[in-house]
Length: 587
Image 1 (cartoon, one colour):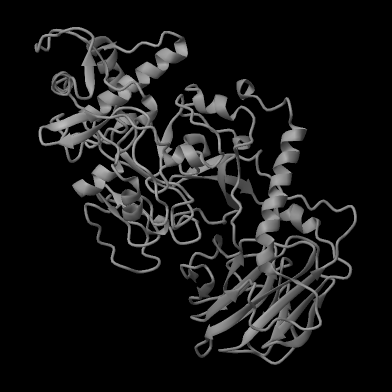
Image 2: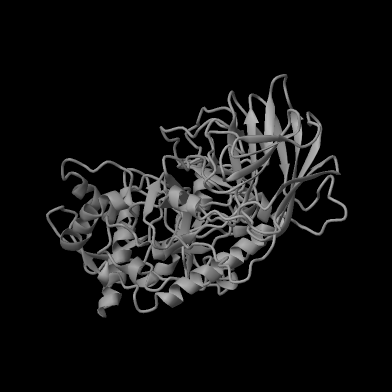
């Protein structure tokens, strides 16, 4: 019995090399080709059903085997739940596991279940930490298989469990109504493709399709057709066949895959490299390391954008996924959650766009006038330390380093407003609200600078982070973001000095003194402002070059794990408070 079906030629015929009738004889070979990181994973071949193998006469059935598939042994999806064939699921080319559409952050667009014409990498296998997805052009044979599988699954839901379906009354109408979902091929203007459906069904009869009763070769004669294999769970892309046929090749490093034809829109050339695309390269957005899209909305013009991911714990998640009533309608924000980075890095979205961030997001280069970048994580209580090194500082260039709240102006130097505190390289001046004060000698190229903030825990304060679940979701370049409006005036009115708070500065491990005391309470991000072409590298820990002596502190890197726990708590509190109020039928 077939385990995967794919690679059907435009004529409707299926070749031995590209059809994908049989599952790989040794799936570990595919893993080693597609994902060098998973070379040590050895998996057995076979499924507990009849399979097909190539012989000198073509394709023939062989003896059944009952070896468990790796996905069955290790579980499916991020959520760990079983497969749900009533919704779209994607098969990862590297780990060979299935993932529910509702658990995937990448906005996939129009799809139907049981598709085979795509290449997908889950976030666990992707070198970027974000999913990658490419829907290829489906041929008519693949579209027929997908159609019959969906008709079978729909009949199971209705309790009839049918296996055969009319070509003219069911198969062709389903393809016609789901054309854009199933293929990137432009919709045909004429109905000549009906004849191609007929020819494909006849040509592959006995190999992939079966007919309930003998039918005429005439197009005028309708027929009842089904799949030779009734195991719908085995329908999936045949990545091994794609590799052999040259339509899919291993990515260069870190286990990604590339397949299909190059796409017209180029990814931004932020990190250099040849922008020419070959026909076999992936048609997916280029992503940097550490998992944040290169194409993303910036925080500006009074709005902030927070990258979102599906919330597997949201109520009515499955009902929403399986319902077709929500097509084209806004997605309720509470079905998603804020995506919390697993590392403390420089924020790509929370910066002035003219600043250049390195691929590892741990170094920054300025351009022309002063502008600012913040880190991905903030602190609001405790003692926290981070440091940076001035790598290059041309003549007349300068930098300001320190801490800033979320409302600090990014198109101004750090310390320009009430939301930031900074230490300047030139003359060692400290700044707050554009007021400068002599603090220490200056610093320059090669110096290692440390920043330590102390914020006492205030009893009765609410440190639970916002969930954003009541905010609208906006789509930008295949990803969803919460859109949050800045409340600047309200934030200004809420600023109050925090008793006992301090900011200390260090130069090459030597304490320069306390730069600020009684700072405003709030959420403070590590921040850097650059003037002209100065380059600064960042170290959030744990291996600091010059850790402070005689101070108790945590490295800023520890905030990543804390932030994930705090956000999970905030989401749980939200669902508890909103219990009984979150319903799909009231939206």
